[in-house]
Image 1 (cartoon, one colour):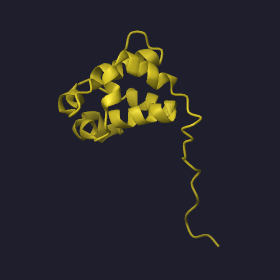
Image 2 (cartoon, helix red, strand yellow):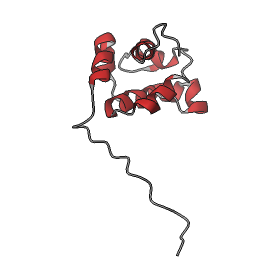
Image 3 (tube, rainbow, N blue to C red):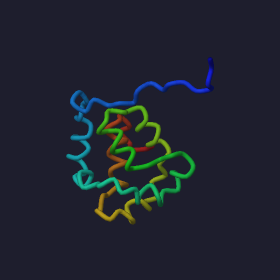
Image 4 (cartoon, one colour):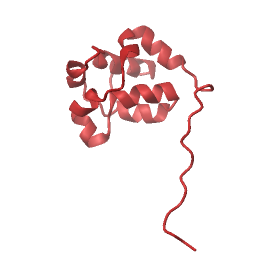
Length: 112
């Protein structure tokens, strides 16, 4: 009998086996990344978030979880407007964080 739905594959992440080297390199280049509390203020003000789902909070979480493809997609939507940096209650330099991530992903010019 078909009930019109199916089970989704598990999205569980084993944090004990996740490679945190990219996150550590990012934190070395932009130390304020460690102070992010995931409040979502950056996403709430992000122009690209409404259109594409871009979220600095999700980017940091994705890096910590090893979800690099999803992070790369989100990075390509960032317009580097800086609104997220202005509203961050913890003072995370999100604009610099995005630029450093682009450099770490292999784009030497830091372009998205």
